[in-house]
Structure formats: structure tokens, C-alpha cells
Image (cartoon, rainbow, N blue to C red; front, top):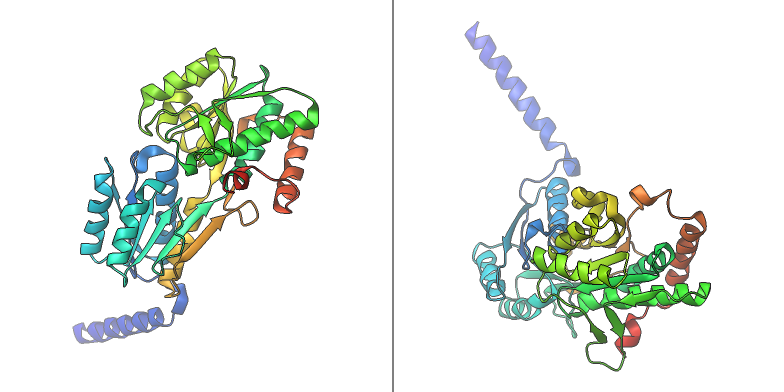
Length: 354
């Protein structure tokens, strides 16, 4: 009896093994590729740009069986140290999050030409053969949000502030301002945009208000309150975790907010009632697609550009404001999206780069 049982179990084991081997592409490889993400200050818990990039790694882990890990940077010196740690552990792809990591990523890529890198919010010119730079035309989506804000403001004032005066932040401000101006030109109104003024002649493309940090809740509250004191009833913080402090102040005063990077109605649900929409920079999709090229051994250096056309940028659903936004305004925004994609409407950032 025992011998028969052993034979039966052996046959079952062999059968299961053979069936598993017939699965082909339907069977996920277990940890086929190791991907390391070097987060910028603010960390994975910022519910903004770091968190969105990390979501792309998590999605790839779920769908492709890759092994994903992250290291958080507290100060700029950590960029190089964290990248080195992933190199020493033989990670196949290292993703840097944020424009400030450009120099550290370049140095690592040039010193390790046989390793693969990607960076969010930066592209090298000329391109590095082992680095995929991921950039986003965030001004396209911000333009739509600016038009929406101008149409929804009751005080005729929309406010913004940034974490640092760097291109991945100011590109949102330029697009928002351009959207407000377009609304004014179409409607004969005079909605003001407080916190940023574009100047294409400036090396920084303009001037505005910046907290000089992405991690201070206190400064988020301070800057948001200052804008509301000046009459703004819709605030757009472009400052990572600092924006959560702004959300707290905005909720206290029952004003509106536009989120950034991720759909903050979902990522920051404690403040969901104030979110008119969010300006989406879908770095999760970009990171996922780069990881896929590594898994498929098709990785190439170059530049990815997220646009409205390829869904690399966009605006989030209106959620609780869906029924409060006039149908005509929603229709105008949909038409503007088509016009931007078709090149009939310009959104400002290209003028700053001339």
C-alpha cells in the first residue's frame, strides 16, 4: 500500500512539473530583474512624485515578477551613496527620481557603461547610451488645470507656490498661468494668478514663490495661508510633502486645491473634499515601460517624453466636484485637450526654452 502511494505521488509530482513547464509566457518569472529606485528628499511616503515613480516599480513587480527596492535620500550627498549601494548589489536597472539627481546619475552611468539607468524629470543632451531620461510636458496638463481653476474661482484669484525653482516645478507654473490667461482671453475676465510670473527672458523662465523644501508641512501651511489671505480661493502647491501641509490649511478655510503628480484625492484621502482635480505626471507608467524593456532585453538609452497625446500627463477625475463644475466648462476643457494635442493651442513652456 505504501509503495503504491509513493508511485502515485511521484506521478502527480511529475505531471504538475510538466504542466508548469508548459505555461510559457503566462508564468511570471520570479525576480528575473532587480530594479533599484533612488528616491529624492521627501521619500516614498510623499504621496507625490517619489510615490508615483515607486508605484511603477510595484506594478512591474506584480506584473513581471521583478525584484524592486528603494533607498531614500535625506540630503543631496545620499544620491551618489544610494546609487553606489545598488551598483554594489548588482541591480540591473537603477532609477533616479528627480532633476537634482542628474549629476550623480550621469557620473554613475559614465563610470559603469555596462549598467542600465533611468532618471525621472531629466534628459541628457546628447543622450547617454545606458540611460533613459524621462521627461514630461507637464505644462500641457497644467494648462487645462489653470483654465479649470479660472473658471471655478469665485474670488477671481488662483494661487501657487513651489518647492524649489527648478524646471520640473516651474513647468507646471508656466502652464497654469497660460491656462488662466487663455480663460481670460476667451471670457473677457481678469482672473489673477498669484505666486508665479513667466518671463521668457529670464534664465529661470520667470519668478515666483518657493518654500526651498519639499518636506516641510509647516511651510506648506504658511505659504497656503499667505495666498488665501491675498484672496486666492484655489491653491496649487508644487512641493511634494510640503503640499500636504498646504492641504491642511486649505481644508481649515474651506477653499479648493489642485493636486500634483498623482491623483491626490486618492493618495491623500484625508483632504479629498478640497481637491478640484490633480495635475497628473504619470511617472509610474514611464518607469513601468522602462522596466519592461529591461525584462524583454530591449533596453536602449534615450529620452521618453510624457504628453497629453500618449497619456504621460493629464488631469485627474473631478470626483466630488463632478456635479459642481458647469457642463460647459468641462466641455471646453475636453476641446482644449484636443487642441493642445493637435498643436492648435500652445501651453507656454516651449517659449521659455528658446
